[in-house]
Length: 136
Image (cartoon, rainbow, N blue to C red; front, side):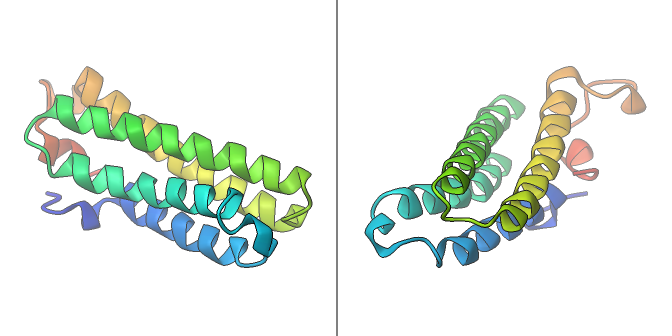
């Protein structure tokens, strides 16, 4: 049973992506410090933060709301990385690594969202948050 958001694979992977984003943006031009660098870093941190905040809420509906926010922030990061690539702030190989990581987190988020929305036939009933979280 997941007692903490820290036990969730999706949170662990989202946090790892945020760290990778910080490392990748260190090479962005200094004139982007308050522009794209700041925006992409905030969005990346927001993904893991929303997963944690949602898991701490009292209902599945509240959790779903925060997972939706995390998903939106993740897609924001994806868009911002594409812009950084087009501006030659990122090398293609670094972009492709980050892009793969983002889509793996997105897949985990989507599966968790679907499981919370629909319930899970594995349980024969709508699972509790803790039962659902054991797999994510």
